[in-house]
Image 1 (cartoon, rainbow, N blue to C red):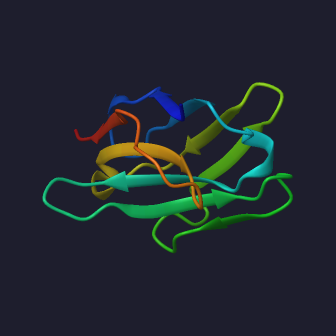
Image 2 (image 1 turned 30 degrees about the horizontal axis):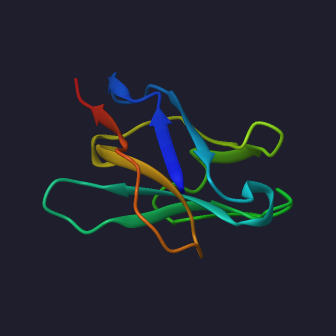
Length: 115
């Protein structure tokens, strides 16, 4: 059974930083592109970052480029999202998922950027 367990969210002031983690299980993690998504209140879920299976290539939404960094540890079946220079518009629930693997989502981790 595919599972994702996200952690590391919290309340942070604008300009602050957070590091999110996502432990995945139930599939061959090292063979899949992994993505981080976020969903703000009342908005659709959006893809913010992806990383290829070998960790050779990362891509970012324009809104987070230069501030967020995705990484992965295939030995630990874990993907990370380092978030710097956080803005109030980064507020939302953050999820990870293998981008081309059907299935359910994890519970996500709440990130709130507010003074």
